[in-house]
Length: 357
Image (cartoon, rainbow, N blue to C red; front, side, top):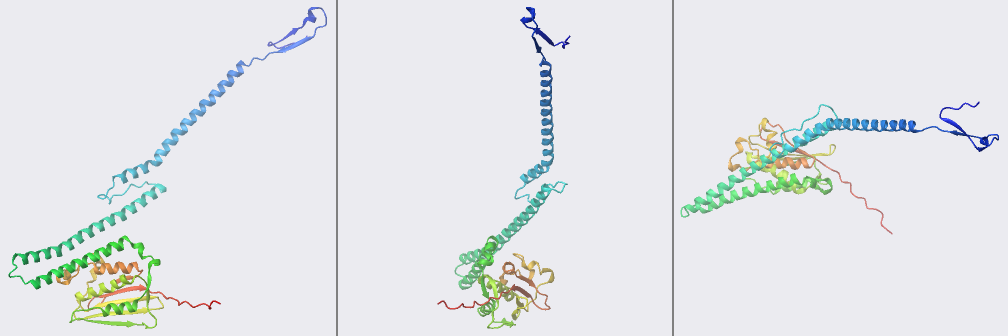
């Protein structure tokens, strides 16, 4: 006898009812409702797990990103508080050495440079306004006194004094404009914009065109200099002439009787040395670095008659630096000894090629 499971059943066709040999038909039934419910539970469990993991991952990522970007927010907030009046402040740096800390250090260095530039500009404006105000006040006083008593005024002397103050103003404004142009257009000093300047001829011309007071003698000495082999310096002729002119102006204000200009060429080192010496009181050692700062005048040179406003040596130092040279004070037992060192160049003459057929 055939044994069937409970959910299996057999159905006989009509041949069994009619008494003939039955032709059995086997029908099988397997209900899927329970499996479908199980599958549905598994799917919902997977969906719930995925949603939960996604939520946890998103929250963890948001929290981690917030922790990582917290130093950035602190840097941003501190940087937003900065202004021209608080450039001495620094942005906070995280303890870890990463990209954010390196960014903060770069910002702090930039702020330091900006603070230094702003302070220099403030000092420059204050000093310039003071130097401009002094000759203007003197000129106004002279003219007011002359107009108050025109009958007793020595007009030729008044005009000479006014002309002197006017020339002082002109020199001062010229120096200020040159300094501003050099500061704002340093890229104009690129090698491509320069020319080869014969330093020997330039020194001779500058010394020859000087008209010092009768009690001063200007002596020129050329050492290791050949008339057929010029000393070539690459730069701007007008600016290089300004360097020697300012050094001579400074020497004339302080010299007693003699000014010595010495030009020496060192071909092996490709260097030219320009020295200007005077027999005046000299420059104290503690002021050797300060005299090259703008509007710096020593106590014994603050008189109006000296004619200096403290820009000549600053301009000379700035121009020499732009020409890749140096300007410094050489120690001397008597008088001031200023030395400018400039790199020289050798220009190879072009050899003409063969004539074209």
